[in-house]
Length: 434
Image (cartoon, rainbow, N blue to C red; front, side, top):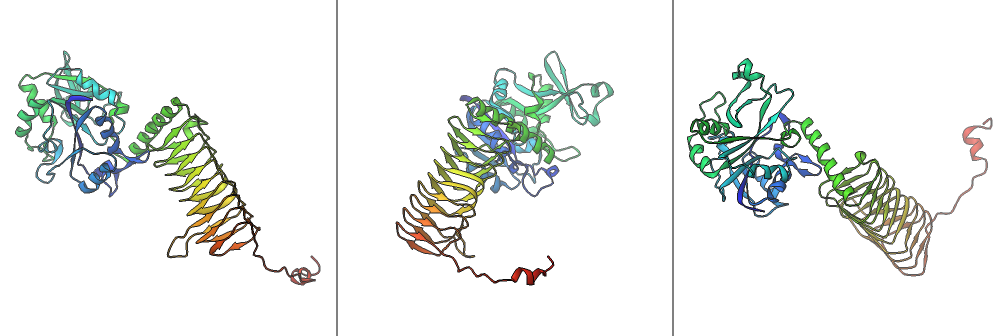
């Protein structure tokens, strides 16, 4: 971690092109707000991370404080001092080198940030060569120095032929910001204070301004829902590669959705079409095709195909088969092979849950617990009306409705109505000719 670099992350904007009431930096990529990733890369390098906020600032601060401590938040006076230059007016970096990042660049990585530190220039400016630079300001570079930035509408035909554009990330010596930020003006068509004006003033004073060529894939900002989707594809690929390198087996990995908070232990198998969400832990387990696991723990178990673990489920040594849904339940050494719903339940080892079993855990007002002991055989099509507690070594007959209460060990629970047989009913109902 650097003890000479401060990182400022600009996260004050509305992001109108997202066409959403939510602040741009709070839109999620792989289960985390995009600002989370910019901060993550910054925190790998320095302890002085400053986040500039304005639009929906309380929501932005609350979201980031779920993950990080020790951040410095600065509120931009966006009404009186709008723009990227205005965002820097209240910033007080701790160190002499100051890197300015954007909160809508979730794909930036530590290795790319560190390249800014390798150049001793007064200003290091990120630039990207594009095959089609149309719509971007051009960066004029001569003899390894940035001469100026030209907006496309102001560019000559010769300048429009330049394919090098501004990537929007800068490293400044602190004295540069101290000198030029107070001198910024909003005398422009937008009435905003631009950080790029610091480049012009520094160039006029013969300061050194070095270009740093960077990869578009990391430095391209997220400005639309399409950008968001494309960034998530890239981030998801990174996450999958990381876990496959750690020993996880993934079948058709491009079909598997894995969020940032998911963790693996040991040699797990994840089949095609699986969706793993939230702070899920998969340990020495096999997740079969098209299963969904949310905020759950799965140890030494197999799940699916086409099963659903909803939040706060814990499986240990358990088999969950197809079309089984588990919610906020702990299953230890359990078999639940088919077509069941197990919610707000605790089920102990050796118990078997038959097809069509459901826990009736909700009465329309409150949720109730189902507790099942060891070696309980639950027959198919059983309804367990919570709150219910079943001791060890119990058999429940198929088709039984187990009403609320406590049931002792070593019993058969059976609830069936007497079968009636009405002779000739079929013929009378459908007609004798059928």
